Image 1 (cartoon, rainbow, N blue to C red):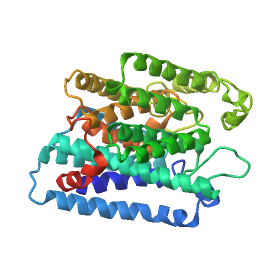
Image 2: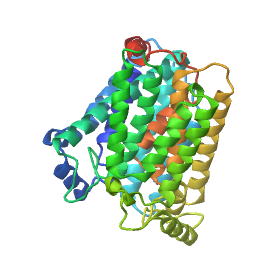
Image 3: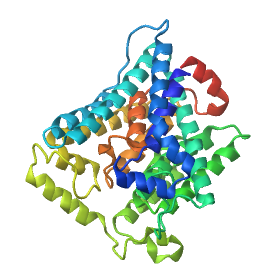
Length: 403
């Protein structure tokens, strides 16, 4: 129960935070597109999650041994906001404070999961993580679907769906993450629960399309590909691989607005919006390649380059090491003969988010669903879990009691 509560609370906190800024502009967007009760809930989320975290930590300490099982990938992710706070402190005190807050959150999540792994079996922890992801996805998809059906989530004449966020791209990545999780749920659920998982998955994909986010298509396609890798045949792998390449191509050069029903993807006639953004990032990197500018400015369409431009070469190297270490862990896990359920989900989320980060800068976020998901995933990457036939919803109570 403690681990499940902490993970669900942190994911919801990331989803309902005003991700672009805590500035007046961000707050006004929220008030313009959201139901009044959600506006009120946002202000209460932090103290609620803080209370849950404190109670869960105290509960977990009762009768437990003070030892940890840390994963190198999670340590590297924690190093990102720590270094960002140090570097930005010389240029922007407000950004440095936000980065420090992100480091404290990442460190708490990493240590708490590592603590539970050291005191509870890996399979229980990994499957509790999967259960928390499943609950989060069902809640977030249902909430955004209610917004859509109720006419909320749109700003002025903008045809793109904002949902519960302040920007359609943010919601797009959230729905992509939920889609990967719900696909995993649909694959492992018992027949009686499959229709629920499939319906929620269809809703997540529908809402993703309404956001007009092309990066979200890449995240979703990449996550689907790896999440389903062990349960599909060779021909299906080739077909899904082709779809993945097509999704990447759509982000790079295609104008989906050529079809009227996909007008939400229109970029004003520009088919390639990434090349100019990447050129801008390269120019900013060239200004101060070692130390970086110390602040975010300009384009943000690549996480590695965005971090390098803002924080310098050390940040780029830390992020690169994190990505390589994560893929190395996934490769080692894939060589295992045991087919694991949570392992498939972890692989899908990690691969999808890393692939999408080549087209958006969300790995540099201090608080977003994408980066919080990656922190959680990195803490259990490569951990064994129950067989892929286990039904997470049915086992939820037992998992919560154990973790």
